[in-house]
Image (cartoon, rainbow, N blue to C red; front, side, top):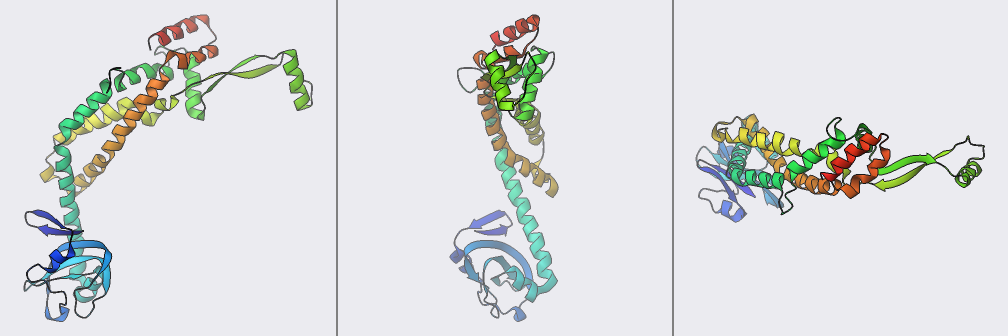
Length: 304
């Protein structure tokens, strides 16, 4: 790929023959007879291109297209430029790379700018639900918060157990019950010692699917509202043509994160739907100690 920095913008050329056919291009330039004026392009190829300096001709895969003060053009690698044109070339190449990056970043942001309306609609669809179920990100966020937030609709016992699951990465609900005589005797045989009575064992009563949707990195409000919608509004108000180099760099990095965040939000919605099913969560009833709390949790399950 060859990128030429023209007055009207960046020109991208695929074929090296197009460079060689430019008026004034000399692929065997004598560097002692010419003075460097400017760098006008850069290139990167898998195949090696011979250096355009007559006393070098070293093949290389990356380099620059340069112009001399008398209008002649040629191509040289970075090392050759330093050797034959010294500090001037090093300064010019750094500035050229910076200018190209700046223009490419502006192009990226302008392209993104024209997609803002579509992007806002995509976010709205994810929030409301992209199918007939109407159980999108807003619904998942609202219904899932009580599972990890005290005093929001679920008993304390449930919230504590769910938080423990998130901390340990497990999803199996165990309850403690009194062991039978036979179970106690087997345990004593395995441990080789007498156990106190009554002896208690832990028993699995269910597994909960979709707990990943409750992880902090999958917080749908954080992704879609606080990050994407807020940043989209801020970006839309900016003047791309007058952004500084640092601002361009920051916004381009953010733009590159938009699609992965949308995908993560979609996946979190699907995972949240698997979580927020009464049959999936009802095994948590076993961890609740007070009858009044069981009634509260039953009400929560009915609302799903």
